[in-house]
Length: 367
Image (cartoon, rainbow, N blue to C red):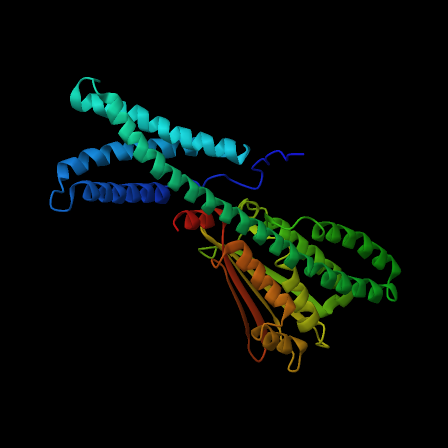
């Protein structure tokens, strides 16, 4: 039985041709093609700037109008069969060639006598060049779609490595509370169920406020276990240093990969606060600017702690929690984020900086 063609459900059929960098690229490439065609036809010595200007004008009309049509139909073509979308794209380019060839011929000659010979010549050139160009753009977009799918799979794999570690530490928290206060342990089980519901959700970008709420929820649970040995200090501020409330709408607008900050808080408690008999404080600094989000987490560092080993292990590429976060930032932001792990004789410091979604989109359009 013959298989029916598959719909193009894996992503866009063609790249986005609407942005300024893409339009500029189309203009430059088409101008280079005009130069090549004129030099091939007349030779370099007979190169005529007047002819170059006329041919360039016609070429730009065809290229830019075709790009505008393809840009407007981009979303609809993503839902079409590839063969249908390809035929439609090719037909639009040839139709623009016919229409603008007729218009250009009439402007220059005032009559349409002999226009069909002119149109056939332009169609032959357009058929070859547009076929090559559309094939290249299609393959380029399919490669991007594949890379996007692979990145999503990688993010899901990295996210799944967080959950067992989180579950193990949470169960230890409940076990320690059962012997001390059964009512509190029962309440923690209910609260942990909500945390696990969030952790088992699909990985992706979530509002920064939601991640902060998750961390505060987790800190409340740990506070029940450690009591006065642990305290957490939050400092939320803008670019100018003005203190912000969590209710500020910017914390909803800014996004963060889910369960990115919580493992850092968890790491600070289990390797920084818990080994100290007197406990200590966690300092969490979150700064918002128009283009970036900056986070800094500090916790005390015992003289001989597992966290020192974790830092050395991270530098060797074996620190699972820290390397996990580093890889997730790279997968989401493609080198636009930074992640630093520092320590001194008293503190363990983690700093990360990543662009907000609008700034990241602008940066990618500029590539």
